[in-house]
Length: 294
Ligand SMILES: [Zn+2]
Image (cartoon, rainbow, N blue to C red; front, side, top):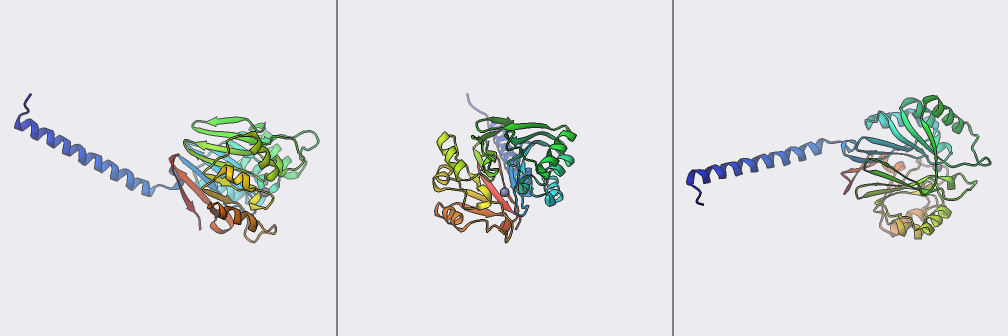
């Protein structure tokens, strides 16, 4: 079939118009992306600066999962961090273990934001905490009607495309650090490993389970202490980035020089909340960008 001159002209005009529209859409999307804040992306993981403590937010397609929150004195600060990220409710609030640098402000957070589920580590009648911060957290959970769930290693939870694999605790212990809930969070092809304050003993247990440990980002265990982050464990995780959550000039000497040396040996990019302030990873689930407050 022969195409007439006029028809040819019309086809070329339509093709040129389509090309212009495509270019405009691409430029519009790219320009809009430049204006986007990290928390506007479908996947964003924030390591908030709460001094000598831990506080991490996973925001994924509108789902909010908070891990710890820092000392009680950081309650207002943590509330402001969450509000700045657009958080109005928490789908899940993981309290890794009962030390105050992790759960100190949990009662304040529970009373400020609606929370669906609070996850705590598993206790028995002998190691159940009796500290004020723990009892305040329990009171706030009961008062607000949040569901309290004790979790163990091996369990899996999913929130849309976000999967949370609870890696530990695997064994009963009286050591609160080793009771830490450790979690591998995965969204599309991006994975994060949150180690709480778990020690090298727990890392060895995890290596024995043959669980998948690989992660793009490792939340270094126990604020960079030398009691965590063994070499075999780091090799198994093989992270591109590591985040150490610790206070400036803290009394514990965190992070330990040997931990920093090991991370350097394996060419891991290290971010520290004492030096970088809050650190935010964000993207679409297949490549991570990073933003630091300072
Ligand atoms: Zn701690």
